[in-house]
Image 1: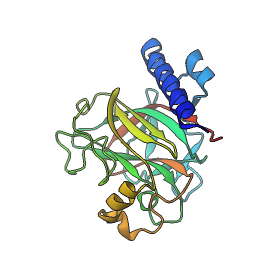
Image 2 (image 1 turned 60 degrees about the vertical axis):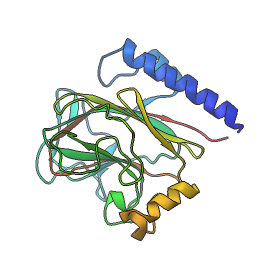
Image 3 (image 1 turned 120 degrees about the horizontal axis):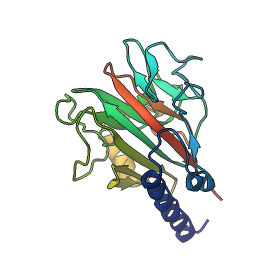
Image 4 (image 1 turned 180 degrees about the vertical axis):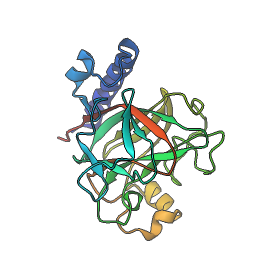
Length: 233
């Protein structure tokens, strides 16, 4: 499709999603505008339907549903992935990280590696004040980072938005644009070659894959997990 048409459509959809967040604060629901734009809930606030642990068939007991949030609440929860796979999409979610906590959001994950991050690029989630990882929340792990920090403190809800298409990928934190990139571009390949992912043959190579929420050993909560698949033409 012509790039001008794609970017125009994306701009309209992003504007719709911004309006929807402002207009309807009810967690884990879709507004009429979101439904019309093709958004789908990945978490309804009541069950873990649509999710399973990595390389398993069910969600482990370490993940709980508390006050309408999907919570990594106990040890041994393990990384969870969507049962469905996604290629091009816009994704948004809210997360609340514990003090000093660490987690992550991965995309295009396959089960060919030993862990989700062996194949799926990871957007870091952590407490930027008390966390111990030099990669801050919202950064594309070891690859891209913003010039600002738009995160809210541990214990408060943050909104993370991600766009993944063949032509353009982008990340926003609490409505602030963070960075853009193109998977498979020369710049992307150069950055991967300088990262720890250089030794992983399948990293960032899948055209579609699972969405993953990471268990990094700390309490973290997720809600308003929504996705809008984008069809290529």
